[in-house]
Length: 282
Image (tube, rainbow, N blue to C red):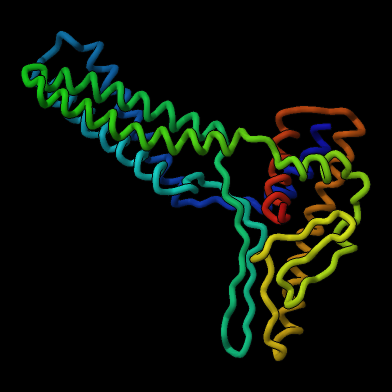
C-alpha cells in the first residue's frame, strides 16, 4: 500500500512550493533559540564560575530571548501565513492587447507540528527571560519586574494568535464536503465532465451536486473581443482541477477498497481536501 501511496505523494508534491524566505527565517530563529538554550544551560551548570562572565552571558541570553519573543509575537499576530510550504495550484499568465495578466491560486495552511514548535519556543523564551531578569538584575528588582511584565504582555497576543491557528488546523473538514463528496465519492468520478459555466465565467456549477466553485478562481470574460482567449485560459484551469480530482478519486478508491489507514494516507487526503475545500463554495 505504501508503494501505491508514493505515486500520489509525488503527484501532490508538484503543487507544493517552498517559500525560501520563510524557511530561512525559521531556520535562523531555531539557531538563535538553540544559542539561547545553550547559554541558559551553561549558566546553570557554571553557576559558581566568574560572576562577570556569567553576567555578560545573562545579558546576551536575555537580549536574544527578547528578540525571539518579539519576533514570534509580531509574526504570529500580524501574519497568517508564516509556514514555509504552500500549495500552488496554478500560476499562469497570458497577454491581451499587450497587457500581461497573471492569475494564480495559492493555498496557505499551517501544520500542527509547526504551531507546537512555536508554542514551545514562546513559552521557554518567556521562562528564560524571567529567570535571566532575576539573575542579571538581582539588585534592581524594579527593572527585573518590568522585564518580566513586558515578556508576559508580549506572550498574550502571540498565544492568542497561535491558539486561533490551532483551532483552524484541528477543526474537522467541512461537513458538506465530507458527506457529499468524500463519503459518496464513488458516484462522482466524472464530476468535471458535467459542469455549467456561469455568465462571464464568474464560476462553474455542478447541477447534480447543487455546488459551485468559488468566485475568483477564474478570469472574468466580460470583454467580447477577448472572450475566446479568456475562456480557453479558464478551461485550462478547469483541466488542472480535473486532473487533481482524478488522482484524488483513485487515492480514495484504493484506500477504501483496502480499508487501509495510516498517518501518511491521512496527510495525503488532507492535502487534496484543502484544494477542493478552497475550490468549492459551501
